[in-house]
Amino acid sequence: MNQLSDRLNRLSPSATLLMSQKSNELKAQGIDVINLSVGEPDFNTPDHIKAAAIKAVEDNYSRYSPVPGYPALRQAIVEKLKKENGLEYTPAQISCANGAKQSVCNAVMAIVNEGDEVIIPAPYWVSYPEMVKLADGTPVIVPAGIEQDFKITPKQLEAAITPKTRALILCSPSNPTGSVYSKEELKGLAEVLAKHERIIILADEIYEHINYVGKHESIAQFAEIKDRVVIINGVSKAYAMTGWRIGFIAGPEWIVKGCNKLQGQYTSGPCSVSQKAAEAAYAGPQECVEEMRQAFERRKNLIVKLAREIPGLEVNDPQGAFYLFPKCSSFFGKKDGDHVINTATDLAMYLLEVGHVATVGGDDFGSPECFRMSYATSDENIIEAMKRIKEALSHLK
Image (tube, rainbow, N blue to C red; front, side):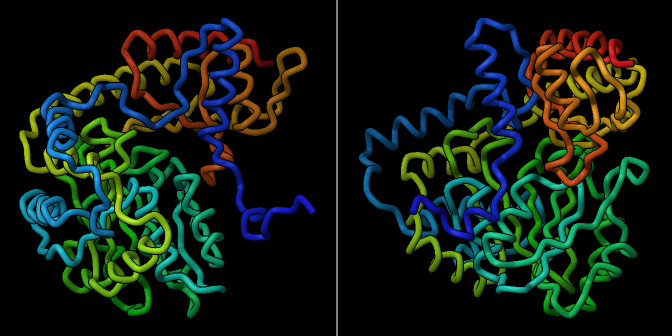
């Protein structure tokens, strides 16, 4: 019988990749689609990083690497964590993987047993609940709406904890909302978590360098819980290296060893050439990171201004990442010809088919009243996309 495993049948396909695929299909038909659906910097990888990769090829970095990554890369990550975050780790507490996505999944698979609960604040990145399901765990969703800037409170966290709670997945700066937890907000969550010694905190900090509030704050800075925090990060967003596929975890050695054991049987070490490029990214000049951050901030200000000029959208001011997550529920129940809008996914499909702008409905992010736009594109694309969206939405009655 052509039957996939129950494990696979429990998973949902990625909504972001689905919308990107649909926009590509329309483009193939000759339709001019502006794609705001994919979370990927539109910059090229900086030249000094590319040069390091070319040198790695010439130096014959073409053989299997150690499962957790080359010692030199892990040392560069240790130094980055100390210099930028004030956090002390050893190379034995670092494990590199094929992107931060695998790093998150490795950590979930290493600590979650069947029936364990994992708290996931909503809106969430689409893959978190699916990874928990893959590990036979139970996602426990804690909603945080636009009125609280999409951030959960210590009171909400406390209320969600049960004897079965094994982990919390926290993403700051956030995909899909761009919200950033302040030091005070993280301290409040840390005080709750300190009382529950079984809970591991998976801190996804992949958007660390794309923030508009100054210094990035990590929940690992609080001594009372640091030995239960697993930081997940990588080079994809800050250095425009999405295709190079290098992420890492930094955390307790027993969890890192578990991830190495899993990865040793699953993918082995990540790409050798990409590791040398990532080492250059962390150890080399950082001006490129700030240049890209400034561009993202300019675009953020632009898209927020234009979105706030569209009647019916409720828009917050994100403090990081490169996403806008407007509330669009005022359009539910409205129609334009054969198009009837009952959900955010309906709205996203309408904007794609009528406005020729690809976005992603918030249903798959755990917030069915919102939709996500990525502004990791040119100012010209943002201006034209928002013009098209405004025009399309004006036809809904």
